[in-house]
View 1 (cartoon, rainbow over the protein chains, first blue to last red):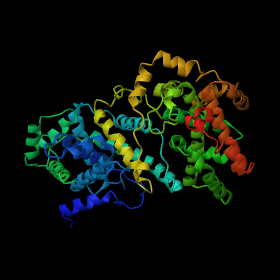
View 2: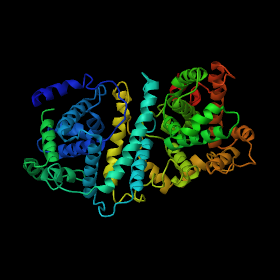
View 3: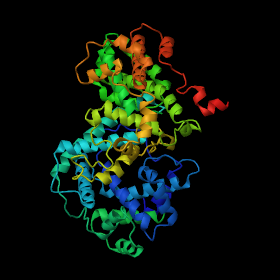
View 4: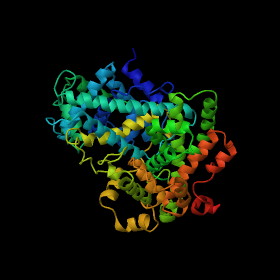
Amino acid sequence: MIGRREFLQASALWVSGPPVGPSSAPEDVSGRLARLVFLDDVASLSACSPLVPSGIARAIAIRREFFLAGSIMESAPPNDEAAAIAIRAGRAALEAYRPLEPSTADARIRWDVRLLRELAARDGAAAETTPPRQQLADLFETLGRRVLIAIHTYIPDSDDVEGWMERLIRLHEAAHMYWQKLAEAYVAALPRKDQWFDGSEPIVRAAAALHHGPLDSAAVARALAAPPRSAYARSLADAHARLLEV
Amino acid sequence: MSEHITHTAVTDDGVRLALHSPDICKVFHGALQRNADICRYSAMTRSGDQFTVKLLRALRDQWRNGRLDSLAEKKLAFLLGWRCHLAADRTFKPVYRILDPKHYLKGDDEKGEASDVSIYHDVVVFREVYDDGRAEPFTPSALDFRLESHPASRALPARALQRLLLPFWQTELLRIHSRRVPARFQPHRITVLRYSAAYHTPDPDKMRRFIIEPNFYNPQDPLIALARSLQRAKPRRDITLPDAVAAAPKQSQYAQALERAYRYLLAASDYFTGKIDERELELRCDVGKPHVPAELDPRRKKS
């Protein structure tokens, strides 16, 4: 088992060497949203943490896309130190997330929904009026369509264009299934507190609040100092600690 | 560069016209009928000239040695959608540069935000072709400012999801590459709020300069009218496809794009069934021809 210090040293090297295997078929994307919710919370905490070095906090803020995709990036753009730091920070944060990720696809969908329900509560969304499953799935598809507008055109894989076509087709099929399953599970789920997640814990509340504006540094420091109880809060605290050493 | 909605529409309409045409081969009909979604993926894929002819050759050879299986049919649909993407690019890239030359002073805008011309094109297509989002694959909320009109937006964390769905797709699209390097990372190119503003509160002067005066879209053009009637499953019997195609080059810009898309699909079909060779296919599909004439490209103009 690799120790944290060794992990951090290794992660510092990863930006110059691929951490991942060959491209894989995207048969299943369950759990991806939950990962992003977590990383997004880590990013918001880092921005106002009095402990995270400003260079790291800045890199995560200005190269957020590389922080969130850091786990699979083989390298950073040339002459872009902030991107390289963001990628290393993303990998470190994701390592802290590993214990939270369920091992089966169904459980990952339930975990996705658990965190989506938490986000809905943070947004003040109406928990008591869950729309029909198809409307929920339609919202995911609509959001996806807006992303396609935003990214404009697909960049094809010029090293393996035929394989890429197949993988792109399967990715869209997998995403479509994912939205359907998320919608179905969302209808059935209710927000709750347990040993996995408790939205009322100080560090979770601070991460949530920091998405919408700054908190004073003393309040953030208190939230970071409070002993985490749920698994989610422990992983957040762990990720925050790892950022101090990126 | 033309934009997502226009690319998708030219492909959707190109496919409708191809399915309506007795001159397009039955293999294509089958592939297009069963794989409309897949055509839409390639409708937004760049670099088509580099790959489509070679891949089409391989599929043709496969077909000659037997039948195309489901995956091969999907690939064929992908390639045909890709040709339609190029038809849109070759029609609209010069138009953007003529109507908004200041935006292209440094050449192409591959790394920058899109010109307003292309965004106004897209919102007009959203209205005209996709019935304000009521027609597939769009939804009426697609160009909202904050998904506010979507019936599920109050129950789901729409604001947070907007923040998360972009990195979701960026990461998954990178994951399917054989090299996950920065050049393959899909950047955030266009702020959708620009679409929302152009759609909900259009600037009358931009509508005049980019849409009305250049004759961007005319629903009376026979090729457009035929495509709309096919979309509604009520084909206009009074419009013949060959006549509509022949008239289109002198009609609205959107009709010109449809004519080009249909021409590319017909050439691909003729190649597939052995009526023409690869050289003729490339000629009819404009393969290798610059999307933007030299006089409209500041980089080539200087040299």
